Structures are given as structure tokens and as C-alpha cells.
Amino acid sequence: MKSIKNNIPKHIVEKIKALSLVKNQYAAFDLDNTLLIGDIGEAVFALLVKNKNIKNFAWNDYINLIKTDREKAYFKVIEVMDNLELMVLENTTHDIIHTDDIEIELEGYRIPIPKPNTIMQSIVTLLNASGIEVNVVSASNRVSVEIICEEYFGIPASNVFGARVDINDNKRIKIKFNEVPYGKQKVNVLKREFKDKPVFTAGDAYWDRFLLSYTTHNGIRLWTGKDGDFKKLKENYYKDLEFYQLLSE
Image (cartoon, rainbow, N blue to C red; front, side):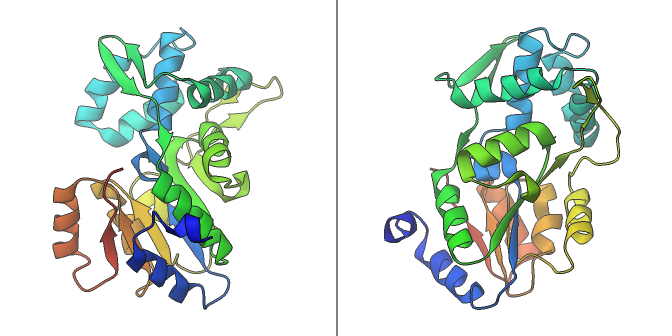
């Protein structure tokens, strides 16, 4: 356990110790660019396009859409997986996890291969050892999120809430748009699944403030995003609360 704590900032270790004094508490983390360095949803979509498993929506279409409507872009990435074989989605995710490449080259773009943030891996391990169950809420497709959370963090599928994809009797993806946890939707998921607020949350993007703001008053809010956004959030929302920045590895 001592080696696990070595790469976690000491003040966060001490705060986790204090939180662990109360039983039946939980943490809720964003995944992409929070637990991960990179974005599993984008990487999987990019590889599906590159391998011609998806032909009706290009990477450049996604980039253009995300500039004008981020939520719509996230929905579209899930929508175009309709009728995709489940095995193709699973295998594509495993290919990304196990590749030695650092990026996917596509349409003139270089999409990073996501890797685990090792400090966040240590935090997840410490939280589990302290009796604080770790959950993940992500706008990326649930299948890929479950696979990468288990592979890199040992987080079981039961603790993972990603964009909803249904599987039909022929083992193909069927899209029913009732849940893509983005922004306020992350909080809606937690309200449905848990009767209490999380004691520890983490995010990287300004729209993760809804998740961070749902933390218990004396809980921990962790920021893995841009320094400028951290300062803005600290000043406007969390001036007198436990809000910490985790510097990039």
C-alpha cells in the first residue's frame, strides 16, 4: 500500500483517510482525460471508421459537428454504431488497449491512443482499499467503457455507466437514445443509481462541473483538465471547498 501512495499527492491521501472513516460511501469519476490520458470513445470511433466498419460518418464530420454542438456529436458517434456487430466493437476496443501505437492516423488527423493515468490508477486502488467504491460515468459507449475500466482499473461492469447501447438477439448493437451521460446527465445517472451523493468526484472538462458540484460538501473534487479552467472553477464554484488539481503526468 505504501508504494501505491507514493505517486498520489499527500494531501489527497490524507483526505481519503478521513473519508474512509464513514462506511458505504462512493466515488464517481469521469473517464476520458480523467482516469485515462486520452478518449476511448473517440479512439474506438476513429478505428471503426479507419477499418470501414462505419462508413456513413467520417472523422472529419465528427470534428466539424463537435465544434458546433458537442452533445450532438457524442450522440452521433453512438448512433452510427447501430447494427454493428457486438464482437466488432469489443475487438476494436481490445485492439486499442493492446496496441503499441500511440495514435491512429485518419483523414489527416492523429487521434491519441488512450492510456491509463497512473496516478488515477493509484487513487482508485487506494479508494477501494479504503472501502470507497469507485464508479465511472462516461459519455463514451458503454461496451468500450466497461472493457477499459476493467482492464486498466479493475472496475467491474456493475460500476460503469456509459452511453447506452442495447444488444439484439443477433449480437448486434441497437441504439435506443435514452442515455448518453454528458454534462448534467452524469448527475441524473447518479441520482438514479445511488441515494446519496459521492464523496469523491473527478473530471477534466468545464461541463464536468455538474458532476463536481454534486459531491458531498466535505468531499473531494479533483481536476485533471486545463489550468485555466481549474482557476475559473475554483473562483466561481469551489473557492472554499476541497477542490484540487492533478497535474499532468
